[in-house]
Picture 1 (cartoon, rainbow, N blue to C red):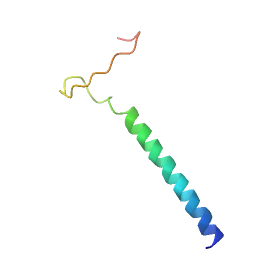
Picture 2: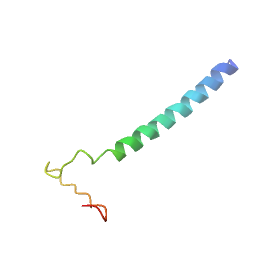
Picture 3: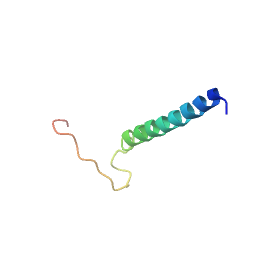
Length: 52
């Protein structure tokens, strides 16, 4: 195989893995922000201490 194609394939795999974890992190971080507590989903997050 061409060495350029080998390096491109490795870079694509690493980039894809990084993108997967970044998207997963961003989805987990934004997961409960749109819930106002009256949606009936049954999930309640404890409030942060010192904030009201």
